[in-house]
Length: 111
Length: 117
Image 1 (cartoon, each protein chain N blue to C red):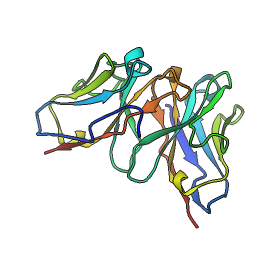
Image 2 (image 1 turned 180 degrees about the vertical axis):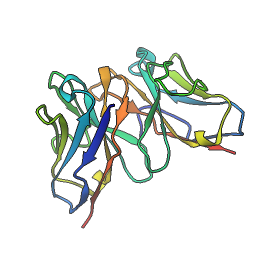
Image 3 (image 1 turned 90 degrees about the vertical axis):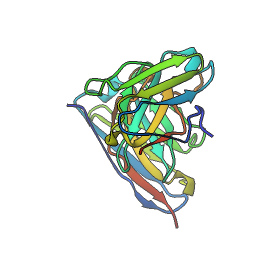
Image 4 (image 1 turned 90 degrees about the horizontal axis):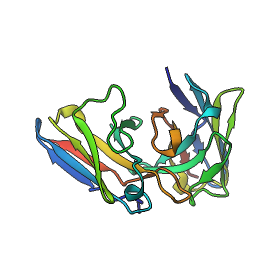
């Protein structure tokens, strides 16, 4: 069982917006502004999309945005495109001795 | 350009040992936090181990006592020594840079470890 909880799947049509949630506790998501999001296409390594809750690395489309409220972080993808279809994982700093815990992952399907 | 290249994976019998390597370029391994993350077939990402720039190391409970993370500063390379391997260790193993223990910004391409008789 993953430390962070994500929905198993979400879907949306091209051009729409979707939001993926990531729920933790006050010991991880709620306690620190160190939530990150990763995109993974089949057979590929994960790619950092959002760090420190809402920051985008250079080269990541501004269609991707992150936010947090309490113990739940969210990734929003606007203007969905076919190439956004992938698995998405959240991660958070944690006060435990297991840094960088991950969520179980969410499969995004672009209809 | 930052690059991480893993090697050392393969097919190994239960109880056996393997050493994974992660050769880094474009930055200095010893000045950064570095992690190993694995992904079992069809499953999600699982943090395995971290080595901090100061040398402290931490492990997931599932590998504690069996795996050892280390680095060779002269080769700018990260390692994962895996002993007493089990079927449940079968996964693609990724090395990743882990600045400040807050996010993984660069990942290798992964190396597949299959534990089977």
